[in-house]
Length: 79
Image 1 (cartoon, rainbow, N blue to C red):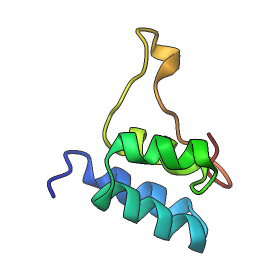
Image 2 (cartoon, one colour; image 1 turned 180 degrees about the vertical axis):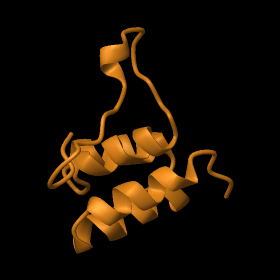
Image 3 (cartoon, rainbow, N blue to C red; image 1 turned 135 degrees about the vertical axis):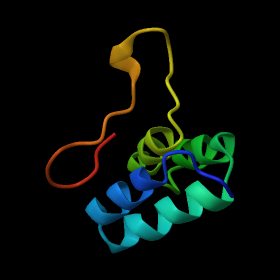
C-alpha cells in the first residue's frame, strides 16, 4: 500500500507504546477509516489510533485548520 507521508508512520510508531504500535500499524495498513471509527466508538480501539491514521493520511475534518489532526511533541499520543 502506498503512503504519501510514509515518514509520518515512523513518527507515530516511534512515539507509541507497544500496544499502540500494533494497533496503529494494523489500522494504517489493514483497515479503512470507517472501520477504525466503528472500532473507536465500540471501545475496541484507542482514539489515538484514529488520530494517528488521520495524521498519516493527511485527513482534515471540517474547514478550519484547527481540525487538522495534530501529533503531540512530547509523551504519549493523544486524541
